[in-house]
Image (cartoon, rainbow, N blue to C red; front, side, top):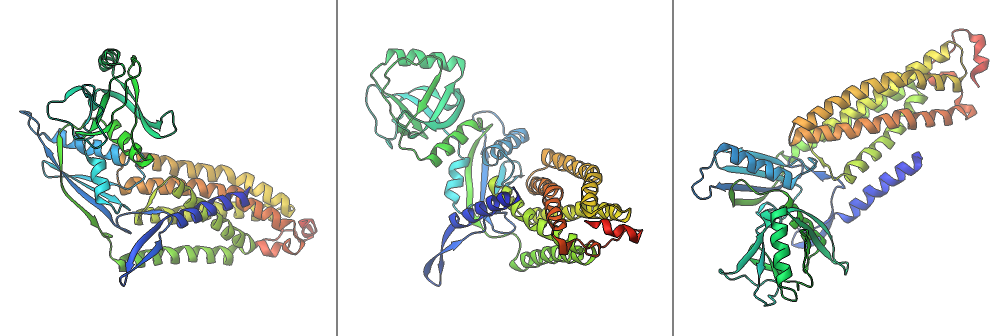
Amino acid sequence: MIVAVVALSGGWLLFRYESRVETRLVNGVSKSVHQFPLNLGLDLQGGVNILLEAIPTGDEPLTPEKVSGLAEVMRNRIDPDGVKEVAISKQGDRWVNIEIPGETDPDKVERLVKVADLKFIDSRGVAWEDGFRIPADAKVILKGSDLKSSTAGYDSYGRPAVHFEFKKDAADIFGTFTSRNINKYLAIALDDVIISCPTIQTAIFGGAGIITGKFTQEQVRELVTMLNAGRLPVKVKVAQKLAIGPTLGAESIRQSLLAGLLGVGAVLIFMIAYYRLPGLLADLSLIVYVFLTFGIMSLFNATLTLPGIAGFVLSIGMAVDANVIIFERVREEIKIGKTLKAAIDAGFTRAFTAILDSNVTTLIATVVLYALGTGPIRGFAVTLTIGVLCSMFSAIFVTRVFLIIAAGIKPLQSFSLYGARPANQDLAINQR
């Protein structure tokens, strides 16, 4: 099982590395550059900055609550799972600043933050082509605000499409219109541009329908995201959009990564020096831990920042701490005269409760951080949670398997390799 876990994690990371290719100009020559298999934060990689301006509608004043609502809607729209490390903040009384790490296309982000102005229009029996801009006097049957929900899916031909459902009142209007216009057209426009103009083949009651067109899967996902994010409390205008570089200097990043590597290296050396063979096996299990942690973070599309790296290094310390508890228990069992295999079994059994308690308390803290925090705080909580769970797996299962295998190899059965010896030397004959 351990080999399978390492193979799956390593294979997934390799796949991500091979698939994340960016074309860059190097001395005037285009070259394909592989990117790190994890998403990196603004501090490590840079991203896109969008500045939104809130615009009051009609006679309604612009209130702080509406601007806060705008920021919250944008957060739900751009980062619904809270793993992208998106930084969203109010600036002044009418501005919302958005920083998205890892993105390279400001235009794509602008499309995502814009209001999805969806309209269902009576085309008066004319089949309007995709891309046609609707006339000013077009009769609007329903709007995007009449939608109850929308999901990404496929049409009957297997092409990407948007499935939707109207609210109750709108569903009645939709049913009446379709029943009166069978074999005519229903034009669907996004931002006043036709995206689909299907033929009404039958009356559609109940409010459920489908938006078809020449969509890609990415376009369908973007449209569904915009429609489901909720109506914005105010109108917005993109005041500024630009790509930004890393917020930390290259030297700061290098020193921080070097500090993390030195810390991990010191831990690995200490484990071998103090615990000998078990320490070496613990270091091997930490390698499994690293592959597993990065594989899961990549699978969940999490973003790695310097606080995230800190959480990762902290979780390594916790993984080592679990091994320390186990090895000390094993030494105690050896000293009272148990065989090597019996000492290993008893050591893990006695250490399990202490390891579980310490990790559960840490997980409670990470849940609180994720629930109440935003941006880098959430990223730290996600990284630490994944690290804690993986460290428990590596310490309780991986290290145990390695020790059992070592205990079955005759040259590795000497108590001196485990830093312990039975208090009664006559009991040493029981080491097998």
